Image (cartoon, rainbow, N blue to C red; front, side, top):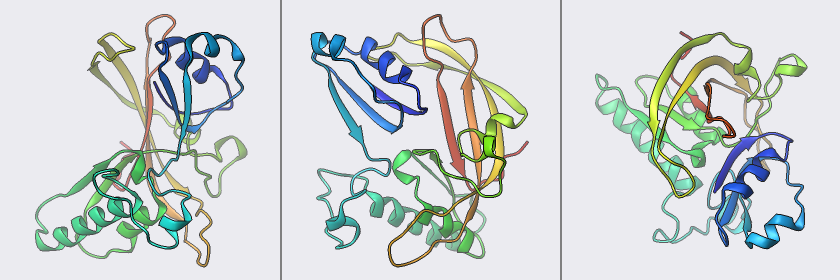
Length: 231
């Protein structure tokens, strides 16, 4: 069971424990409450794992500072490989200016350096869309709107989408309906040893499930993109 959420509550962890099979694994991506009791984790013998937001290489000094890469068969997408792929698309976009290129990626591409590349690239360029991996700080916002995940909630609903969720080991296939909200935000730059990054403007798109089945956690995704998304 994978938890992708941002909350101080322990509820996501509790729900994940309840739906995970005996001897299963719960993986936490993001920031959630981690206060647990021995029971019923003990009875079900559940493993708890914490995953780095950027994927393989994050917080590994031999990788980030010394440039020691991970073998491709063991880690297909690392921080650097995500960046290299986007730079390849930027170069390709200059060769085919009449073609729209968009890189669609998961949480491993939630990288400030990647976001900045599009802003610093003049002329035709590849756009990007990535699932948010962390609740970033925003610039010039009221206290209740100062974090990334809270800001789009104050925006008006732009529309709704309906789709079918496929079945998994912990979930039956079912239909889902989500509202879509979006807002342009300015991300506060993260700390980088030895150099400073500038703030960067992106569009945050929040998809929130309406009327989930009783007892089921609503499905919610936050996407970041360089594509203008306000209407």
